[in-house]
Every structure is written in C-alpha cells, then in structure tokens.
Image (cartoon, rainbow, N blue to C red):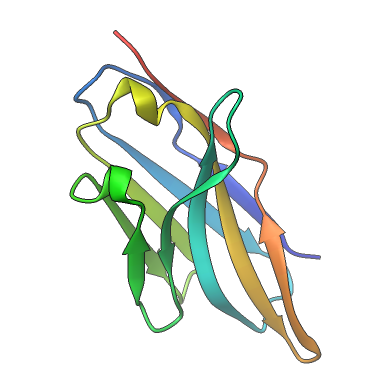
Length: 119
C-alpha cells in the first residue's frame, strides 16, 4: 500500500511564505512524475507545479516566479516553496505521484493540506 502525506499548510499573511512537503511511503519501486495541485472552494482542481523523474519542471502561469517545486528522489519526498503568497492562492493543496510498479503505473493522491492567505 502506498501513502502520500502532505504537511506544511496553514494561515499566512499576503506576501508571506510557506513550504509544503509530501512524503511517499509504502512498497515503492520507483516514482515517475510528481506534482502539486490545488482546489479552491467552488473551483476545479488545477495543476500548480509538476516535476518529472528527470527533473523537468512546469508551473501554472499564476505561480511562475513565486513558487518552486523540488523533489528528493532518494527520500521519496516532494516539496513546494511558496513565496509572495496572495489571497487567490488560498486552497487545499494536494500532492500527486505516479508510482511505478513491476506491472505498470498508478496515480496516488495525498489527503490535502489547507493553505489560507489572509490578513
């Protein structure tokens, strides 16, 4: 069984910073792509940032220049450094990982961590 557990969310003032972490555990052969998604109330879940196993990175236009995604493949960890936070960044943030098994791949999601940007 594979689990993804996010941490690091919370309440922050506009202009502040937060660092999200995601730990993947369980019987993992390898991890392909990983990413951070977010879902604000009344909106669809959207990709915030993604990183491939080869460290190719992409960001949503709304976070470019403010957020930094990184991974530690040896520890099966994913991170999101969020700077210059804005109220519109308020959402539940989810970690996603495509886990590779002998028989193929499967996508897993974390339970989500709330990020609230407010004064």
